[in-house]
Image (cartoon, rainbow, N blue to C red):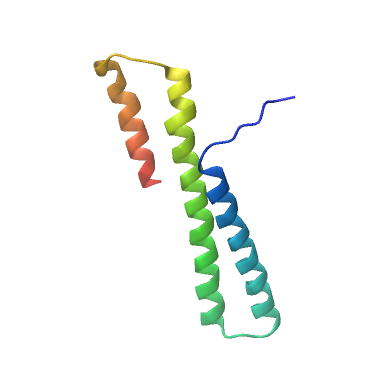
Length: 92
């Protein structure tokens, strides 16, 4: 059995996703109730942003911790590529 893989940000990610889950249920109810498309689209946008932010936080946390564990200590000139990789992923 794999050991638990928990990071400091996981509780916040879980809260964000549960909140998005509730909003998504609300969007379904809005559509079923015949609410205006603009209202539905706004709520869908909010759900999409919440999920995207949760994903971004998870990936950044993984890079900051798991990648560092695998790479280990490196000389400054060898770190440049790793540091640039971590920086560029913020634009995903």
